[in-house]
Structure formats: C-alpha cells, structure tokens
Image (cartoon, rainbow, N blue to C red):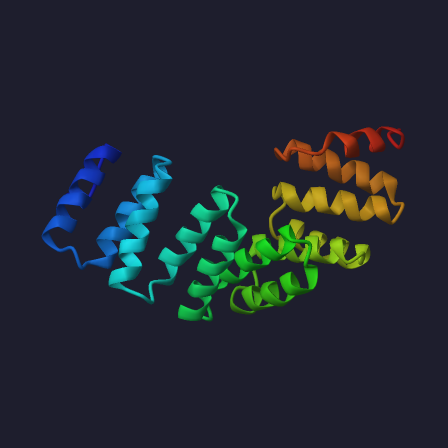
Length: 208
C-alpha cells in the first residue's frame, strides 16, 4: 500500500484489497471505517468497525467510533453501550467516559454525567470537551457559580472554545450578572456558536 494518498476512494480500495489479503487484521478494518466515515457512509463504516472488534475485541477506539455512529442516528442506548464497552476495554481512555457523560446529560441525569466526567478528567485533566460537559452538568444541577468557575477555567485554557462562552453566559444570566452574560454571549457568537434565539431575545433588554 502507498504511504500517502491524494484520493480517498483510492485509499478505500487499497484498504479493501488489504482486508481481502488479511481479513483478520483489525487495524485494516478500523482504518477502512475511518475512511468511510470521512465520506459519511455510516452504514459501511459501522460494518468495518464491527469487523474490527470481531477481530480485536479490546479495540476501544473502534467501540468509540461505533458509539459515534449511534449518536449520529440519535440512538442514545447504542451510544452508551458502545462507549461502556470502550471504557471496559481501557478504563484510562478518557474519550468514552466523556461520551458516556454526554448521553447522561441528554437524558437529564447530571449526577451520572459528573461521575463519568470526573473519570475522563482524571485521565486527561486538559480534556476541554469533558470540562465543558462538567460545566453543563453543574448548570443543570442549579450550581451556576460552579458552572461559571469551570467555564472561566476552560476559556483560560482555550479562549476560542465557543461552547464555554455560551455556558458562561447562561450561568452569569442566572446569577443576574447581565453585563457579563451579554459579553460572554457575544464571544460565543463570535467564535461560531449557534445561540438559541430565545436567549438572545432575553439578553436584548440588558444591552447598553
């Protein structure tokens, strides 16, 4: 196989040829799955990742990708299942813990989310998506000050991380710090966050 490819279809064809030669190579199936994901061929990618874990049952990354495909379909149960499999394979792998937390947040279960996010951050203290998930969880629990503190920490680490600015705006608004909320929501929009129209309308009252 070539070391570099200019054409994704050529790479996919080479991967399929490699698999036909060595069908038990989980890495080939996994790499094929990633390439198919790039083409947004979720059905074929899913089959490739399933073949990867059939040949390497402890390939945590493949379970994470399968969870992502489930999430794309809105299948929270499937997403949770595959990420739990990934975490069982590699307990110190932060990504599945963050994804598990995402499912809990979607289901309105912030306490469960916090437990999973603490594990993610134990293994990767700078995992910015996990930190933002933690901010969201504390906001859902009504601890707006805690949410604000975590958002400030995220922004210090990555000033252009738009979701943290949005969470910061929400936390400040609920603490009646309207000037800071307006400033934060403007930053969220500047960095590309799709802010809810209803929240923007509420903030109009507090613009100078």
